[in-house]
Image 1 (tube, rainbow, N blue to C red):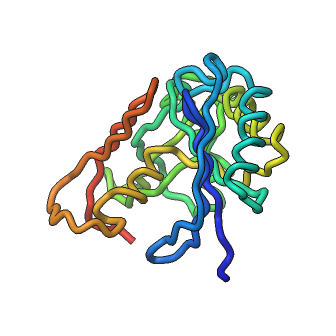
Image 2 (tube, helix red, strand yellow; image 1 turned 60 degrees about the horizontal axis):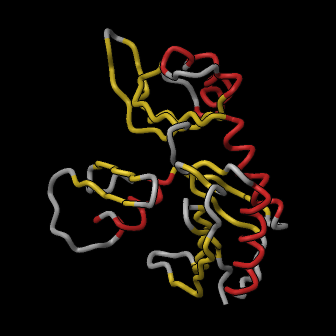
Length: 206
């Protein structure tokens, strides 16, 4: 059997996990959820990591998950997404210098932020070669608390994705839904405390 991957969603009212076989058409192997006590997660942020850890341990038992490595999603008021343009650099150099170039674009100190980006394309401006990116900045303390909660359940986070990005890949027309969409579309995720709205171009770019 192909190697599976497990995604974990830590919501305001429950923790959920889904195990899939990746591929052009991901195949769901198993899924489960366990409710959270009030106050464990508020507005998309883990407040009581010990309670979340207990719920995740119960989730693993109830769902009969075997894998310990997990992918996480994050999306709350402590995550900022900005489309910006930076001088073109090779990927390795851009990533290493990102923190020195983006302070003016985010409402937090880069020392307190976890930074990542997704390239959109290249443009020419006044003879200069620029790279358009979607910059993602997440408050480091919030990420640390999330990771601590998962580790308390003896799980190993191997990746943290922006929830709207995952929503587009899972539910957008570019992911395989035959919606006959020829213009921008919006994907909505309405949660108990946090709602995500992601507007994207459904045409595949890669």
